[in-house]
Image 1: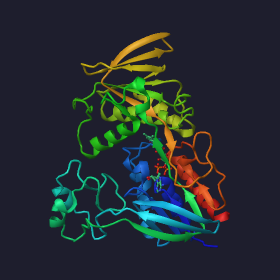
Image 2: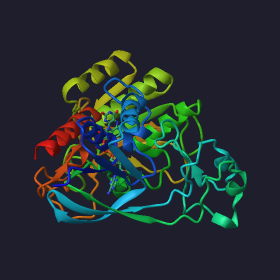
Image 3: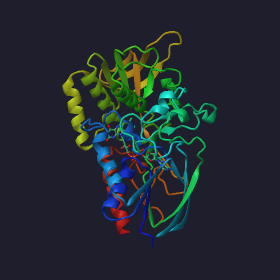
Image 4: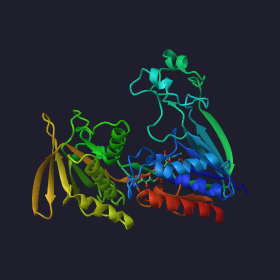
Length: 396
Ligand SMILES: Cc1cc2nc3c(=O)[nH]c(=O)nc-3n(C[C@H](O)[C@H](O)[C@H](O)COP(=O)(O)OP(=O)(O)OC[C@H]3O[C@@H](n4cnc5c(N)ncnc54)[C@H](O)[C@@H]3O)c2cc1C
C-alpha cells in the first residue's frame, strides 16, 4: 500500500488538502495544470464575506507548502494516464515547459524586452506561486526574436525546452479540479459577443483587480470612459432549463461584493442588481446588510429579458420585468455584468458524475473528490470540504 497521495488541482481546495495531509505526516504530490498555483482565488480582487484580498487565505497556505518537505508540486502539469487501483495507482503526468528555469529571480528583464502584445513573458499580478516568470509558448517567437535570451543575467531562459513526462505511484488520489464559468456567448439575448461593455462576473472581478493593482480608474472596455451606471444581471443562464438548471450558490454574493466594492471605492458609479431572489446562505447574509447600509446599491426584483443591442450608438438598454412595480421597464446602463454560473472541471478519466456533470462523492476506492468540482461552493465551504477530503484520505 503506497502511502503517498496525489492531489489534482492547485486551487485553494487542492492546496488546502495537500497542506493538511502533509501536516499530518503524509507524502503528497500536488499538480496544477496552469503555470501557477492558486486557482481562481489568486486572480480575485477581494473575496466575501469579509472582502479581504486573496493573500489572506493563499499566503499562509503557500508558506505551508514551501516549508513542508513532504509536499512536492508540479505546475503546468496534467495527468495523462491513471492505471492500477486502490493503494497502487500508477499515474503519468505530462509537464509543459515554462521556457524559464528555476534560476529565474523574477527580475522582469525578459518581460521588459518582450516585443509581443500581450507579452509572452509574464508573471501574474498580485501573488504568484512559484514566484518565477513563464513564457507562453504560443505567443513567443522563440529564437527568431531571442531578446529575452540576451538580457537575462541568470541564464534562466530555455526557449528549446520540451514537454516532459513523470511517472509516479500513489496510494490515493484527491481530485480538486474546481470549476469553469458557463459560456456567456450562449445567452444570445444578452449580446455578450457583440457588446464589449457586457462582461461576465469573472471578467469584472479581473477588471477590479487590475485597476487596483495598477492604481487607475475603473473604465469600461468599449471606449475607456468611466461608467456612470452599472447593472448586474443575476441568474444569467442559471436556474434555466435551457442552460444551467441549478443555482451556483455564489453569484448573488459575488454581485453584491462587486457592487459594495464600487460603492466604497467609486461612490460616483451607480449600481443596480436585478435578481429573481437573493440567495446568500449562512454568514454571507451579512453582506446583504452591509450593501443595503451603504444606501447606494439599488436592488430590483425582476428578470432581465434582454439587452437591446444598438448597432450605431453606445449604451445598453435593459428590458426588465419589474416585479414590485408590476410592469416592464426599459433602462439604460453604461456597463452590464452577467452573474454567470459555475460548471465542473474534469480530469481525463471516466468518473461518476451527477445529472449536471459534477463529480459524485462515491468513486472507485482511493479516489476522493473535493470541493467545487462536486458542486458550486464558496471559498469557505471549499476549504472545509478539502479538509474533509484530506481526512477521508487518511481513514479509507
Ligand atoms: C466571479 C466569481 C467570484 C467569486 N468570488 C468569491 C468570493 O468573493 N468569495 C467566495 O467565498 N467565493 C467566491 N467565488 C467562488 C470561488 O471561486 C470558489 O469557491 C473557489 O474558486 C473554489 O476553489 P477550488 O480550488 O475548488 O477551484 P478553482 O479555484 O477552480 O481551482 C481549481 C484548480 O484546479 C486546476 N485544474 C483543473 N483541472 C485540472 C487538471 N485536469 N489537472 C490539474 N489541475 C487542474 C485549475 O487550473 C485550478 O487552478 C467566486 C466565484 C466566481 C464565479
